[in-house]
Image 1 (tube, chains in turn brown, green):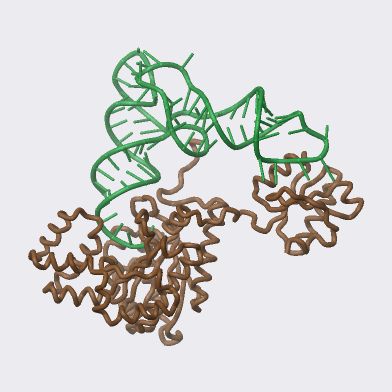
Image 2: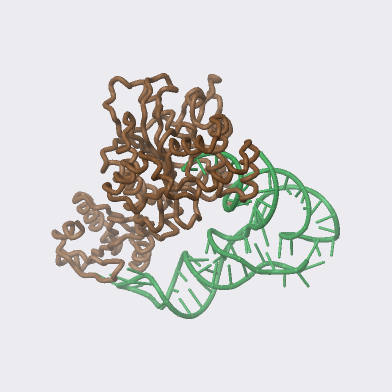
Length: 417
RNA sequence: GUGCCUGUAGCUCAAUGGCAGAGUACUUCACUGUGGAUGAAGAUGUUGAGGGUUCGAGCCCCUCCAGGCACCCCA
């Protein structure tokens, strides 16, 4: 055991059970995406570092990306996020694409970070964007995709909430308080982290930015004002759309939501589990200029990303992961003895030709075969012995209820459909 | 990248510096046409890796690896 070569730090092996859960997750987010007319796309996992130089958070590329030289000596990056790739893909076909475009993706990403609960170095991420519209209506649409996904996987609005804010609103409020535009970016970063730092430390950090006592007081008042959205025409309208989309109970205004990435210019949002035991489930926002940095004409858009790790932890905590994913539609054909093997092979083949998934056992004691079927997690086991062969039937046993009865062989395939 | 905690059988965990154990899971049998129970028997480890202190180390010290918590950052 000790000599098995270790896997790379922060990566995960997906054994069939875990893989089945991931496939299940993808089915759900695919459904949520496609019900709003979004199309799947994918980009390369390898990119040049230049793609990220112009945008992203500085730190995301400099500190957290896997960068290495290819055999020709050129620097290559394992993609830490998808947005720059999306920007390039849109920019290079800008004149042919039908706007606004609705695209989604699911694939692997890499960040060189210290692994923790909910954070690995290799993770999968759902990205979904609407590009080419500035309408508040489409901001609401993305919130609806997120909320409908949460609903699809069984998370109710008393378990998760999507917290929203608007950077334009915050910018205006900070101006009113007398914050200079040079100070704003640093201050916004601090606001984003207010719940992570002790109150006195946080206040000192804010004071270090040059704010006076009155201004700090005003900001603290701002950040507990859950009615602040009423000052924003955009948010007021957004909440009306959200209600019409039938997801009102999932959406809540939260003035502390800012988000770290620099390119958000309007709506910003994060979905959180309500008890606060987990990192953000998903996060996103509205951006004014996606493709400008990679050489295209400016295009606005809105989108969000969801990692696979946190959502699975949340679903597990609420007992919402389906348990029987292994062999959902597989039947198990026992082999009565060596003499009956050919007959069992014929039976299995017959069933496969009718579209069933069939696992064929090997001749052994029936006790062992049933035990194997049980542990594999299949729903049905079939027995074809001398008696059944003689009267052209097959015994079907439901492994969950322990009931069994013979069926005419010609009807067999139809009873599983 | 910084600080702290943890690492013993497949899993969950015991073991004052003194013979490495239990529960569970696993294998075989009771049960030669049937898997959830019961009983009997059996197998399982270089105690994460390497070094040091000691008559003697799972336990103490050092280094490394991995995981967890906080920071940082973010999915």
